[in-house]
Length: 235
Image (tube, rainbow, N blue to C red; front, side, top):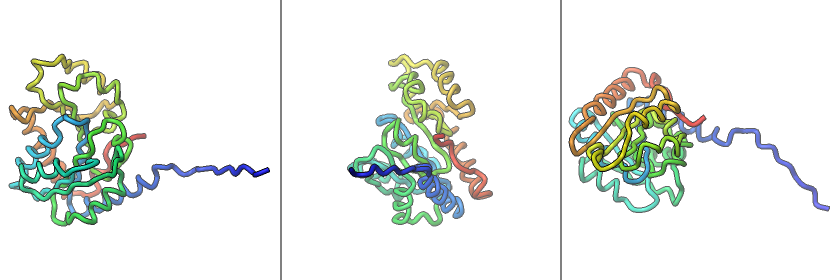
């Protein structure tokens, strides 16, 4: 009778990813480049917000941008067309996330030397991307008003790993029942210290605050590459 072989897996399956994420963060921080990851569901306005942020910073800083999608280069082309900065499209071959090794390989093809800021627009998904540290310094999570104030209850991990939460499309408040007080209470139960901003690119609401937040981190990385540490990550 064939013998059953038992294999004990004791190493954390995410340990390799965490090691590679730290390497990405150290490499970019060491050259004075702030790395921000933008996460959200599809349609929250990531591409629009990223383009607006880049345009408000590009006269003072050198900026690069990467987009993650299953197919097409539409978002990378939109950002490049709207801002004039160099962009890269990453195809993740049908996966629901991007991990630190994929980012490492993308960085090997993208000359980030001299960049003050690198922004990555992660794939539109409120589940898988929250589980993988990609090597960013901070996670920026977007939720649009039309998506509803109940999303922290449905996707708690994504709201738990955010360093900044942007509530976008606030000009639509007159058309949707979005309770900011209830939303913030639900978020604070998961992530008590996270910064929450209201944002609307069309009206300009919150853009100045987002720029100031980003600038402070850019300057902090230049002063102390290791000072920022890692973003909030899944435990």
